[in-house]
Length: 168
Image (cartoon, rainbow, N blue to C red):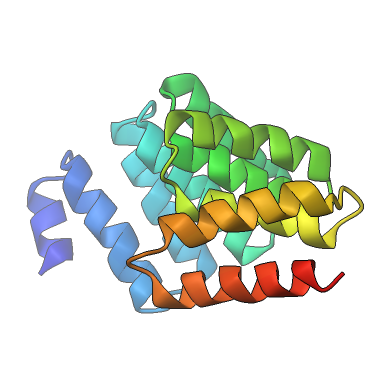
């Protein structure tokens, strides 16, 4: 049905975005998803959300971190999106570039202070990496706990981390 719609309306940006999501949900081959993204991007080359989504696609696939970073940066150049900063921080974290991860996450949190996943990643960095800082980790895990009233599993994790940090 969607392909029939797009054959009649090939310029439908939302239709192509929906096609990308359908391909991903159905587990279509990488090249098919990449092509669907290419078509959507041709219709709206400066859409920050789409650029961020494409960067996330490459990062999660694990095939091309350089390309993921380029899309995250392009997303940021097209509009300040906290999600793009968070994802860039996550990419740096996965690459063990912890100082760069912290800088990107700080920017995400400056733009969106309630972004729980960025607080968790910052807390992880200060708990588990060479940037370990117990005092900062306690501050960050406390923030995670306080922000997680509606997320019991995240709240439990923060409480567990705080308990563990208190026993050091």
